Image 1 (cartoon, rainbow, N blue to C red):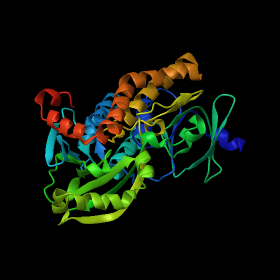
Image 2 (cartoon, rainbow, N blue to C red):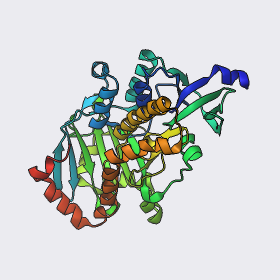
Image 3 (tube, one colour):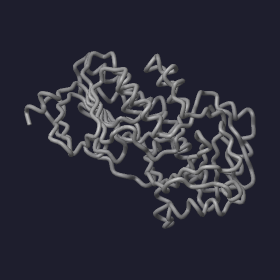
Image 4 (tube, rainbow, N blue to C red):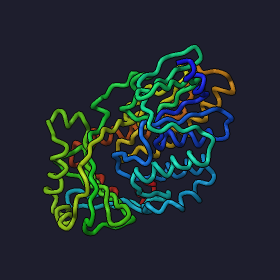
Length: 382
């Protein structure tokens, strides 16, 4: 075992090569530190998601990696998102987005980011390595591969392997809280009628509040279509989330019409979304959690990529401070949690409150749609 450790001694080990992990790796590219990026998959790989790439993600990636705009221009498999239309009870409100945003499948976008890290940085890549255990060492951790004899010795771990990965459970003791977790499903459809390439669509139904149905257009007349509800409600009301997906379409005259010519491509896939409405422990001695591993999904939009990239950026900044001060204590690293909360924590809690309470009362949904038509209020939506 010692020979494997000698060959794999790192200053920083990032577990998970999605947007959070890649953002951290890109932000550490000129740090002078020896950095490993490990993922259990071989890229490209799929990830069940809404496939929306919000403005916050683009902005942060440009700050992290100066050449990002030029690299992004070469990504053909993306669509520009200019607005989002919301539908409820025969009412519609549309919001125009100020920031640059896109849709792209996670198969394409994640591989795009991963390829930048792989080809343009000195970060050492380990694909197809699933982590089976993490144990404490004198100076940090030993990271044990499940499917090989490789053992990594590292001073710091960045957990970017999602809520079902090992880092959130092993390092922070994460357990699912159904009050702050969404059960969702997603499928790809071709040829949905009346879909605008630059507009995403959100639908609400009184039967399924709090929760919503989405249609996000992608390249080649394909759309990402999904449905999600709070896991607490799914359990209490004994809802079959997959059957409800199709029921949502049948209950809506507008959706039934749109889906008449549509063809489902592939299976309806499920995933769980850990919401940022509950601020969890996301750091400790020699480790930081980012992205879904830190439960940073926006309860209102269901989007996590923007917050994932931001958390990766802030994690890298904290890593540099730790090595500069030679301080890897939980108390010192807590500055990461505090800065992240200052930037997005209150917003996520507020959105969680709106999702859980306001949407349970149809009057507030109707009021929101009426107020949403106000140009004064629209200017606050970016």
